[in-house]
Image 1 (tube, helix red, strand yellow):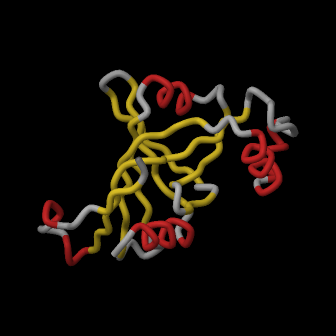
Image 2 (cartoon, rainbow, N blue to C red):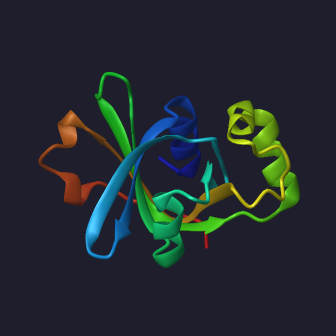
Length: 143
């Protein structure tokens, strides 16, 4: 397995659970990932959300992707960075038209948060791995 397997799995199972930390309290929410590629995993949110404030204070996150039947899962632990590139932000608005329902129509809108898990490690898990989690090889990516 390599990082391309991770990218493909995430793009096939875009709904994921994303964990952040607020102080010493974990916070988990379900998100629809925008896309994944060889540079990482991309998401969109609104800057007023607690999610964004938590990631600004602590960029470490974990995402959990799984198949609909829960037979295969992938964990991604890493760091996020916020995307300021106007071309990527414009592409987000174009490809995720529901963002306009929040009044976000231009890439420089300060309400738009585009962020990426850009570095970290991932691993796959199935029920067969239930007692062997520590032995599962990790796939490193990013910097």
